[in-house]
Image (cartoon, rainbow, N blue to C red):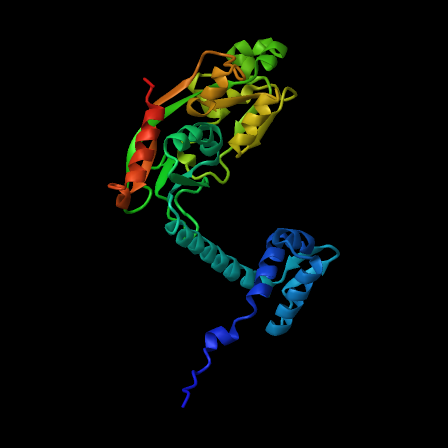
Length: 320
């Protein structure tokens, strides 16, 4: 006699995962067409799945206004839970797949600026010497609060021992000086003095949304160290542009749009290529403020981590 299994109430109550996937995409982009493009399906399919989901739940998930859509209160609740679940499933699947490949994977967490301006330039050398190791990079400014399921093997930032079970090795300290293009200097010769520099177009790194604002250096701080009153800029003079995206500021500098502060470890390659120059010789040197290589305690005896650590330390060694 066949023994029947009682229905699993949790699984039975679950809405269609295909419908939830369509809903999450539509909620993320707040547009059915973009959701369809992201999932490589038709807009009609997205609309149908969401109608079925709303019917099964008995509530509206979106407020529709032409092509744009906006989440209802119920939609917001469902999106918060569903998106987090999909993130966890995707990351778990990646970890499972990585354990069944011939290559070992290291997950590196660093700032977007460090990943774009420092790490990306040097990784080809690491891959050439270590073809059996893959690297995952998680770029963020919020090192103290990672998304659920994200457990980096290595952090590269200004926070020493950011969480339990990690240890840190100092890499280098901050050296900060103004940078612009040779063309901008030629067009603005007055910026060879601190007063002239203060009064030109300045591209300023703002602290908004950044994790280590306690050590934040902007133009006001930089000029203050050199006893120049930043607030004495002419009110009808050149503008100050603020952004919390350092990559954007450097791109604007390269487009001859103004002067930005340059962190030496990030702009050094651009200086060596003579794409950027220092309009003045003054700089700030913070010998006590280090960037660190922080690693998980469990990786101490791991061969792949050891090779990455040795490679990274060789890259920051001044004698290399």
